[in-house]
Image (cartoon, rainbow, N blue to C red; front, side):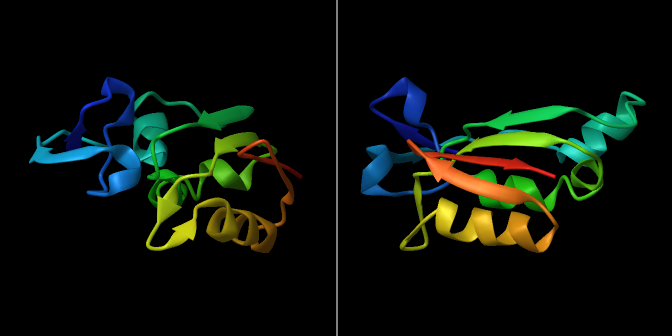
Length: 111
């Protein structure tokens, strides 16, 4: 993760939006599906994400969790690859059968 002058803005992206210092640290990570399997949790009801631009990547690691009747609130105003995250996230969730809305920087999704 890239460090920032703002402790709340650590990110996997080296970007001026996050005030990245250019210094980075290694961190261990796992997918939500992996964590739920390890904890023997079959389904979740609600997922809230605000992970500084990594929401798009996180969705890739929760395909099984997204198969249930889960509701989502995803902070998605971060720039990722020149696009705001919600412009990628909302269509992906729609393709998976979710109804999505975007307001105040948050994608809301439900079945």
